[in-house]
Image (cartoon, rainbow, N blue to C red; front, side):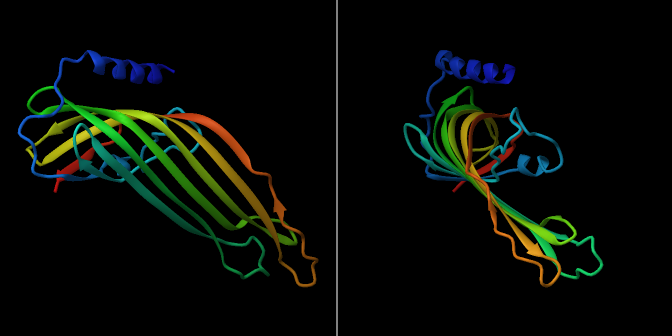
Amino acid sequence: MKNILITIALFCCIQSIQAQTVDTAPSIYKNELGVDAGYFIKQFLDFSGTSSYLTPTYFVYYKRLMKPGNLRFAFSAEYEREQETSPYDFDSAEYYNVTSSFNFKVGWEFVSTLNKNWLLYYGIDLAALPETRNYEADDFDDNYVFELTSQNFIFGAGPFLGIRYNINPRISLSTETSFFVLRSSSQTTYKYIPLIENLPELPDDIEPVETRTYSSYIPPYSLIFSIQL
């Protein structure tokens, strides 16, 4: 709650900042491409935010520079494949557990100058996060291997606030924080694969669709290196 209040307070401060929208020396460049080094840092440190559910993370950023604001996109993709070994000597089959996800957001931002090199930017994003899990060996018993398939789709929206340092007219470093309200819809199916011949086939166990609404605060751990093109 403290982090959320800080974010809201920062947004309110925007209205009182005596800054001008970036309007000096119009840039000849209309596109900006960025890469988030914080995406790699997150792989080694725990930045799970305030939610125990899936939190958006992004690697590549793109902006179409316009007035009075900028159209922005960001995305990342993850794929993980692990081999699972049966605990039974008579079962020589190879099992793989696969997880894949694609995170995407689109938004609109406004920019205000603080001084020659420092800029403040803020706006709102719409986000979508589809995720698929296919675990060929989620569990075992004496007769069956349990295969799990799960489909999870998350979408939502939220404000963001960032600060940017211009190294030169084309290259910059920035970081940002955001607060999302997200809606999740997921369904899981279990299949029971016989380990021994002549065992009866069991029907699939299809769980009902589960939905939930939750919030996710994303701290400013990003470090986005950008260049205008």
